[in-house]
Length: 219
Image (cartoon, rainbow, N blue to C red; front, side):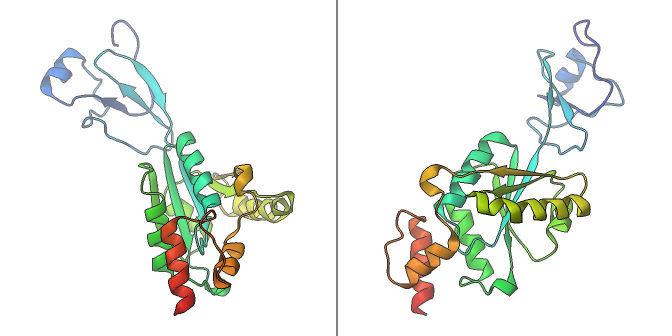
């Protein structure tokens, strides 16, 4: 117990300081772990936070995978990532190899651009993958797949995809976000086409993305 309050019987206890003093002041049952300060522990069943003040609160670690080809990453993609970063603990922007789509930008470039564009978001990680999405999600211990819906026409495809993912990964949920209205018309295809014809895409993508597209079209 702590200050007369029983400690929870499940999960992991995280203590703010793993020093001997902390152990003496607030003894922790032997079946609980005392972990370093501010440790972030992924746990399928969630865990508890045990502070010097005996404040207990549940922490649920939601890891979200946002998959896509990102050829290139647009302001619409970034808008969704920024909003998701405020809702969830950890966002993985998963850049798919997608060889059947014959991407204009190679995979390394797409990963690098996504990292540059999202560098201001501390809980966002960018990774590439070339496997089945359900397998990648499982490997990352993620529990949510995030997708964007720009229009009603996107829903039918996304609904079918989410049903497939539910069969392949029953414990993973699919969530959908709509972009801000000013980004609702933007797609990577439109950006590539406008860029190829020399159009101004400064309002559609990050400056570094625009430069990478210009270089790709010139090569």
